[in-house]
Length: 241
Image (cartoon, rainbow, N blue to C red; front, side, top):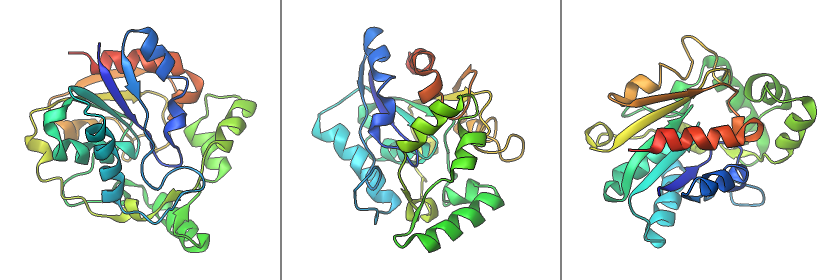
């Protein structure tokens, strides 16, 4: 049995894993899906990246979880990297699912292509609360292109504006490369949320992990909606010893 802590990405909250958790439990594991600080509907969006990190750290510590496999999706990769620095004794393995692996001293924004940087900055300025809401056309064509329109629309209704400041905060991460924690990179081969090539997830992000296990599956950035059972099975593969 493995204890998974599933950390969502931007625009999501912990409920995004609702179809994944039951399959992990069917396979004999325990899975938790906390919501990162500042994420979700009707919550205070005035958070920094460190608040995001502390919220997951507290979740693990307050429940006295140990020997945990931390799974981070997209922005969640930057969170689990920092959480592992803070509580390495509680972490068994890190699984980065099409996730950011920031270099020391950089921000998540540094790893975004220029057109996203410009768009997100404009949206944040016009939001009134320094948040970014992903436009539906980008969601439809780049994030969940393997869904039909009805499913893509239903999934979009679950999203909420994401705090912009955590994208900008520079992360020390000076301890991350020295951690003696096993790492995996889970790569959806049809993921175009970051444009494939120079800005793509794999191998740009995965190679920053050094020695790691690579697990791949077909699908978009949001297979959590389109292939949740397969995603759960691949998470188990990525998280096993």
